[in-house]
Length: 241
Image 1 (cartoon, rainbow, N blue to C red):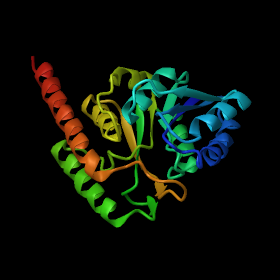
Image 2 (image 1 turned 180 degrees about the horizontal axis):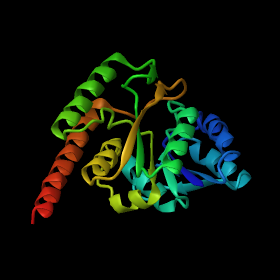
Image 3 (image 1 turned 30 degrees about the horizontal axis):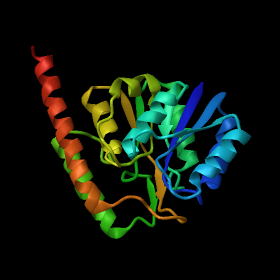
């Protein structure tokens, strides 16, 4: 079986080596494995390290994003990926490779189109989640859960795994920033793809500065929410024609 790991990066020079070391362990367990770094116009030494390690290891790929924005970086990674399954893995060490192994085992041995991790169900673990951010996260995600009549409660979590063939059907991506991680699972659920929800762990970054800006992103999240609501209405009209 095969796996592509998309890692979008912006000014993550201090986290690149640790991310590669963590993910490199999976290479021994997965026949065809690649890490795809997409640099989103970094202005530190991120690009230098990516060039260095992509030359050193054949399973590491490095591409420059053509249009600035996390949504574009994710879409570029999807298009560049070559393997059957695709995951998006953040470069801040917040995601767990143990969870990624669980993801891969579940999706490769079953007929699911996606495995959606939740940090807020029984047996999930979170560490050092900022209190105010936690409050807003729970408020927004539960709001989305209610209006879409969903059983999922962690839409904005970036770390999930998908069949590449399914992700290609979701393109183009309209979200420009972190709201891309709301758009993708909502499309999965609204379009009736099959998925499984499992508990995962998450820890706050120890090195570097988060690029997540609550005030700047709030309107973007609601744009994506509105877009997906319109899509649901159009899908329902098409269904009853």
